[in-house]
Image (cartoon, rainbow over all chains, first blue to last red; front, side, top):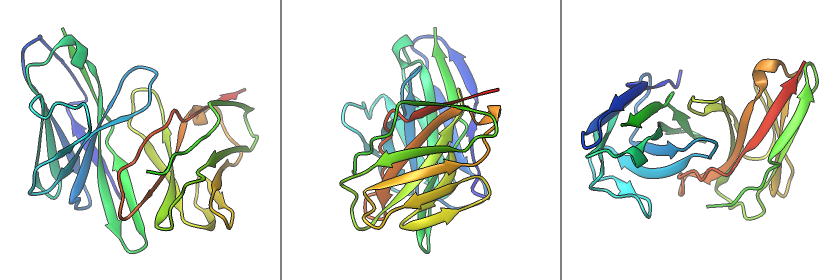
Length: 117
Length: 110
């Protein structure tokens, strides 16, 4: 149980184009999902918190107009990198929050490698 | 968010037990402790979570002393495939955002 998927697993795009990444919780419902970014040899950095049916909350320094987040259902959140540039090349990872009873745990997707040429 | 401190790296050999201690002096009453494992180019994988005392599952044990200001992840009889970065995170129901530190890079040698 507690499986989170991401699609695509990797994408290469030209500078100036937009890229959409999907994050799905496959066997549980997640009212809250999170998007992280990880650069080589660095730790994960939280970009935004995605709440089902409401606007995402962005961390300081993250451009909300560049990284569009939509959480349309309890099992799907999408991150769209608009007008991507080479500096946006990174490893993007989502997580879905499973809460209930005595636990509250985030389960992570496998990540999406974005390369902007 | 409670800050955590853990060793940057640890070396071990196959078959040995690896213990990684994490300090979280400012842990709040509602906070619980979660450990993740990450391999290169993969998302973090949930290992174990606990609030107090000891928790054990099929892959690890988590020891939490009474003051909860630290915790120790114990990996029994490691193998080469356990070489990874291990993250200790603290969070609670009221503050469920996770703040990742640098983690501990565990290297298992033959």
